Amino acid sequence: MVMAWRFGAVGVDAVMAVIQDPATFADWMIAVPSELRPGPNWPETGSFVERDTGRELRGRHMHNRHLIVAIVERWRPDHELVVRLRSGLGGWVQVAIKVQSRPGGALIEVRSEPLTATARLRYAGAARTRAEERCAQVAERLIELATPEPQPDWP
Image 1 (tube, rainbow, N blue to C red):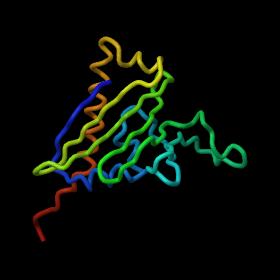
Image 2 (tube, rainbow, N blue to C red):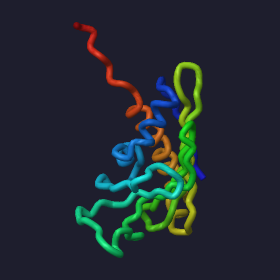
Image 3 (cartoon, helix red, strand yellow):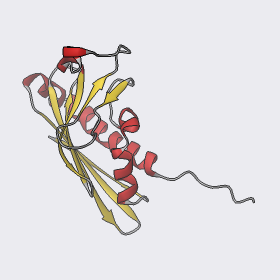
Image 4 (cartoon, rainbow, N blue to C red):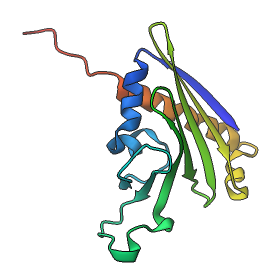
């Protein structure tokens, strides 16, 4: 397991609003394809995110397990999201994001743990440092997206 923390001058509600917005998933989750289609009840437990192939799925092909990028394992709207994410090596990784209120902002903790043998390759040896960097980037992107745009001072 690897872990990273980041503090941002944003509120917990702002960070959780970014997580709840399905359109921003590819913006803050590291190493996922940019064309994604979230399930209709994102981010409720059991919902998923699929690759968007550009084709309309119909009939018995409405759900294609091979296109699944992420599955929500736990969702607590006030402070936590746990997602099972398909890794680039074909295995599965669990990514847990916890947001805690602190004076002046929020502390975002991102934990990542391999669930399959192929995913464990990303956490062995020198690759462990890269996994820690990816966790830190998730937190940094969440802070960036949750930070409101500065308003101009002129009328």
